[in-house]
Length: 122
Image 1 (cartoon, rainbow, N blue to C red):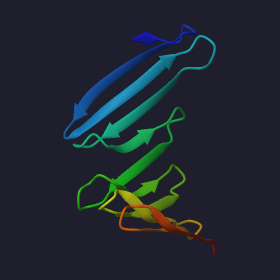
Image 2 (tube, rainbow, N blue to C red):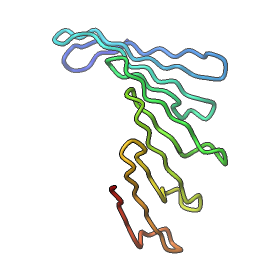
Image 3 (spheres, rainbow, N blue to C red):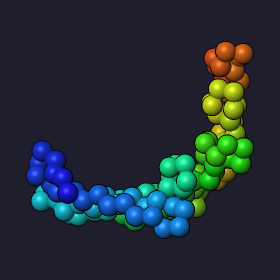
């Protein structure tokens, strides 16, 4: 248990469920209402699900090649964002908001610098 400078107390717990690590942060505020935040991580320690203070989930799926970059993120309203990456530099090449069908495309040169940035809205 630890406290911040306003004397709000927090408790951090970690537990393993199968191959997943669940980290929880719970608080008892003196001035505000209590809340809890939970993060579920896979083997590499990257989050697969995060619950915010209102218990709304955000889930992450990672690419199959090296499982480092999130290829799909969905929120509590089931709104999905997908992304593809240039694995040489670890930068996103396309990011698409599936609900709005809006996409962003970025082109890079041989050194990983941005050459062209295009945003498409339907």
